[in-house]
Amino acid sequence: MGSINIKEVSKLFGETRAVDRADIQIKEGEFFTLLGPSGCGKTTLLRMLAGFYRQEEGDIYFDEKLVNDLPAHKRNIGMVFQNYAIFPHMTVFDNVAYGLKARKVGKKQLTERVEEALEMVELSHLKDRQPSQLSGGQQQRVALARAVVIHPGLLLMDEPLSNLDAKLRVKMRDDIRNLQKKLNITTIYVTHDQEEALAVSDRIAVLDSGKIQQIGKPHDIYLHPKNKFVANFIGTTNFLDGTVSGKTLRVGGAAYPIELNNNYEGDVLYSIRPEQINILGDNDHSERALSGVVTDASFLGESVVYRVGLENGDEVRVHEHSIRYHELREIKDYVRIDLNPKDAVVFNASGEEV
Ligand code: ATP
Image (cartoon, rainbow, N blue to C red; front, side):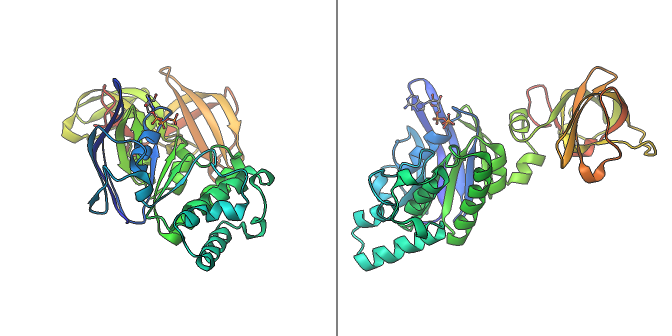
């Protein structure tokens, strides 16, 4: 099994449409992430793929095979959850061996496969320990080994890193990504953490209130969000009110030439990332420079984050990378900034891209 086809799938809990007509095609070997805020329907969609829930509408195919009524244990899926879900009374080895024993794999082959899986997650040296003698990260590695040892056609992961501390999360997410690529298992990963999703995924589906808002590669979703929700949820952005008439955009007290799809005119919301705004040096000239005053400055090492109050009352967040510093600015300094409309995304009054 490799590709997954989710066709117009909905799950209802009473009046709530937890998943609303989800339509997703996932390719063989792809690392695909369901991303969205709490309650958006990520886990519900994952549970339908696992066979724990039956959808009220739509169809799910694994390769070409319709699996709507295929029970969970016949779907050949490996699963990893947030709370590890490993057996506390079994050793690491026996935990990993569990799925193979249930499949009646012979002793020799079982030992080989468990050892191979433990090696992949760098736990061979701890195979005789009980789970209570392991750290959170090690327990999650046991869960990962247990999921891949059965050679699943599909790997489902639901917030697998949520219980780990920040540094370990970054290490584990890199390890998961590397293992997934090495084994080439089609993987569907659930997270509410946009940075994690950007780092590990081949493609991401952003969900809100049960509905898919956008599907795309990480850099596409970041640079070309389709609506206000996605722009706001992925990364940080500045929203500025503006107007478009003819081919002119007025925003932040300046006018810029702009060409929009369908020659849209009217009120717009202009979204520009903090790193897409430049603070100009004293010798930099720009006809469209805006003047402002620094209202806040945070030095973060690799970058400095400023808040700049513009003359028209708008405030923008600006990230300046260390290697581009002209100088460190302080609160109350006057600065000139450059907005580049080419880098920005413009939404209409309903928050959709125009
Ligand atoms: P989280 O990140 O908090 O786990 P999620 O995106 O995974 O959230 P789901 O758990 O899929 O969201 O829930 C989607 C919606 O469906 C929510 O409104 C939730 O309250 C509702 N829901 C989920 N499971 C049930 C259930 N068994 N019965 C009734 N409503 C449910």
